[in-house]
Image 1 (cartoon, rainbow, N blue to C red):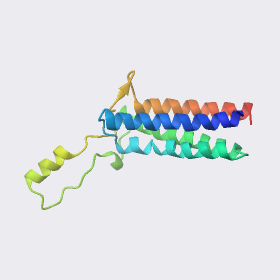
Image 2 (tube, rainbow, N blue to C red):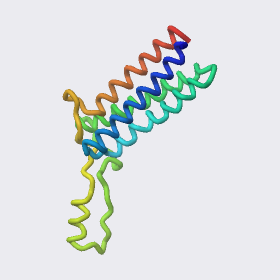
Image 3 (spheres, rainbow, N blue to C red):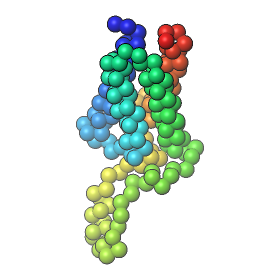
Image 4 (spheres, helix red, strand yellow):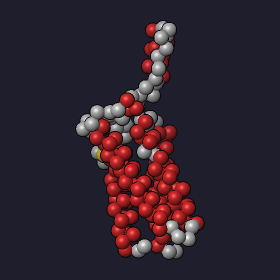
Length: 157
């Protein structure tokens, strides 16, 4: 197997593991993701597709550069989310757990809406592993993958 094929296989495997773990935490452990957590999944879907494309295409050097951009973008998003969790930044309006209360809603209807609403906020980590939130692990992973991609391109491509 060529080194490029190994690189793209790694993208598919790491992306699949990352998404699977996020689904496990959400659906098996029952932790509701916030909107930024959901946004942080998007790069992994892109990387899965790019990994498969890299395995199929002959000249995949440009895909490695695109993957680097995805890693960098994902790290920036995870860094922003980490900053919100650690109260370095104020959350944007998209970070509220948000639901709309109709003007004609009764007190009982509002109470029911509050109890039924998922409790997910960008400001508090729902799940931690070794004292780091999943967002912080995502940040570290993307920084490492970005740096590995630079090393890979300088060494191989």
